[in-house]
Length: 568
Image (cartoon, rainbow, N blue to C red):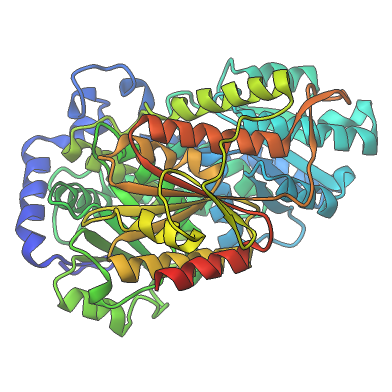
């Protein structure tokens, strides 16, 4: 199939996809989705009928462009130079994509995103920013997200010290659902503005709503152009007669993802042009949290270095997402994968503003994949377990002054290892854990540390070593942000994951105020992060998952290098 924005090479799977597209046509699936028919996915309306606002949000937001542009003009005129978004998951990933892709226009705000409870990450933002010239975006759909509220309390105190009580609230805006706890906080602390999002939009489907568009306008993105690209894509996908020359790429992608996942090709491996590379992280959250449940799921694999055909099992679907002028996806390694029978999809963007269209395209594709997997793509039934476990850990800390950690199996070379796998050395225990893997499995490296480029590179090398030796997919994510994306899939899929938690000593620790404006604190960011790591470990073990924890007392990059050498 060859179109301006799409090329596919599916080999033996082409017939299955053709049948899937015929099924979509014959059962009027697209018409029914756009008419909010919950029976596309489940007989029950609850959790579906009230989660379809994303289908029409682009047109709604088009009417808000002037008001949002006025916000951007006002804060610039008031002398603000920077913005810090305080959020997690769906509230933070789309703004991060937009900032990394578009940068920021002269005279607009330089936006950064904080979605880590690692105290070193919080400290570094605090040291970098002048609170008197920074606008803080408190972004949470529920209004109760513990990480976001902790960030708010900490930075409110920073602003309070810098500008005083009368002006502090003007440095904050809220994005949330109507009636959430954050609405009350915003009123209490006199926020500059509160944006109430459509409550029928789930977090991971919110990129084109206030959650994505408020940060976008603050960095100087042409909102009208961006939103119109999304509208064009949405209206192109409304066709019910799928044709060769249409604009229904989201429909075709959803059919491919769903049909191939049912055949075991459920490791969606993204190869993304460098300029839009961050879009992969947004897609990762959308696909993992939408499809990973009821013992099924599509695992997104992002940032994995390309290998030869011998590096991969028979569970991959490769999707190349490229700007048309970029030759990144036109290389020998990808052609070799295609020529040896791996299914490959090529998606092409005219320019970076097509990200607006990509947001909608992938949202629809995720919803269609859910149809073929017979799941509800809009809920997240297994996320709460980690939160409850972490809450218990924090309560234990407040009572006893410490979190209950188990004894390590081994202590060596500045590392401690925890689990049930035995070995004479850390490296032996680590490889013994990986030796449990088999075809169709995957390894998730979960790094509860500050994100740094050198750690990114070390994790990538370790993941590549594991993949090349065991021929299984490897992913890595930073905690706790991955809990709001791939965390659902880790606990909701068929149990094919091996989970390696990576923790480390913190250089700094920062108290979390019990209340904004108060100096009283009963916990810290390091304690919160540790509780989240332990809580997720407990939830994974409760689901029968295979889990190993490695704690680095010294140089984490050196330790990760030693593990890579052991696996090779």
